[in-house]
Image 1 (cartoon, rainbow, N blue to C red):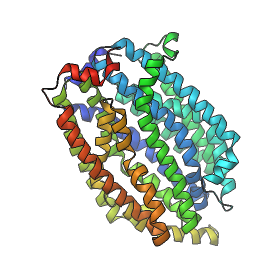
Image 2 (spheres, rainbow, N blue to C red; image 1 turned 90 degrees about the vertical axis):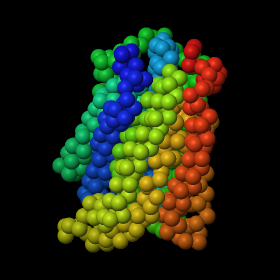
Image 3 (cartoon, rainbow, N blue to C red; image 1 turned 45 degrees about the vertical axis):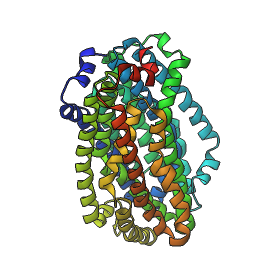
Length: 474
């Protein structure tokens, strides 16, 4: 890595650094989420709403395997950033090599198991007779390329930790644009239906993987040797301790999606799964600037904590909450004012459609706007929960990071989904979201405030930090 580039994380003004890190991340997330949105629009308009239901039930397994790379990428890059902040370049190389090995082996094993048990998994995820075959068609093809997705998710976070966020942005933009183009070719031009949507996704994984491989061969200054890929217990333990935070969070989201699908089928029908499919895409798309700020915050906080510049860490927290709060408020206003217009983008009212598809589309347009408003009801306050959980991950405190990351989905939303729907039906599903967001924000805000007063005291000794983070100076 360029030491001058990484050193900027400890010297440049926080606001400029956050913009420098967050803008490319936000653009990359925007394009990636636009890809998901357009993919859903194409599938909904050209195949039908049940195709959206099919993709929605496939997401948990592909999401979880891809999240292996995301988890190892984020967790390992936290270790990498702090090593760079402490001037330990050799450790950074060992961490990156071990990240690569862990991601490849784990995702490959899970992909094979996913193909072996495909029928059991699809049924478990909530598919019913109306769209099971559509789901299986999409699932098989996408799983062939899931190892590439995991490697991309890992590599993207390492690129950002290396201080080159623009390349991380390109790594997300290229496959997203390619997927949109391939969707049009395979679904519309070649009329391949659900298989076309799946092959378009497969191609997008391959494009992303090719770009990231090229980056580390031609542009990266993290020059790995074969020895870097050999797993070292101490490095693996340090990576896994923080990776488990992200993996547990992503795994909980996968479990949550499975539960949502089954609850919606039990108290509603397959169209309610399509409603959630649209909402889940909107959650990724609408919150792209908030997620971008959060991703930009991680390397800044991690580097400065490793360099013992606690005032800059405190400033990065306050600035990140301020910026992301502004975007969250804007998103909230748009969702509340224009829910019907947003939902209408995903469905077609063309006279060429058969009567059954038209009826399903009308029902989707009727059900989704209200559900969308409920899910986004407390969006302005969730930034505290996101930044708070990320702070503990950035400074290497795995247990608090894990627990706070799980507050919304694991501790509050899943129990609420088991309690409210028996009394309120499908409405209970949508009402659960703002309640869980509010409770998670209150809890995270309390612990973040307490930790900042304790951890970021300018009088804290260097020895105390070294004791708290013993792996940073190996």
